Image (cartoon, rainbow, N blue to C red):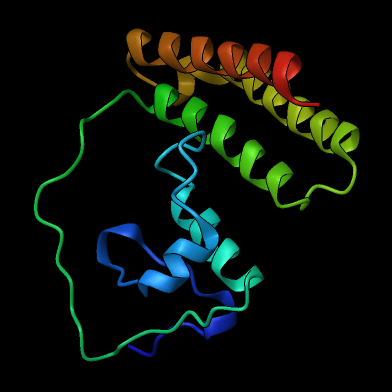
Length: 147
């Protein structure tokens, strides 16, 4: 399979090699970001400092095992927290109020759909309850923290 174009490449931290000078130039990984976005941030900071990000097609990396399993709604909340921070850090949200409004509107529509059609969509009341609670938690988080 052909590697992605270098301008859109994101280094995955589990299989990267970074020159010591590049690592020192951009600093350590941003500990305020969750593991979900630390790769993107690292790659973006490398590029902004003028470092080349490339692929070695001859190397193959296989990940055996995995991280701690977590409920989907917990992972989704982690994603929302981390991605907003990443996008704000790199000035990729032009109008935060508008973005917040659209994100909240979508989450509220998802919550309504779950409340109205959830019994049809999910056979398990437990799964449905987790999904509804997860959306409610996401909405509360975005209202409080997205600015």
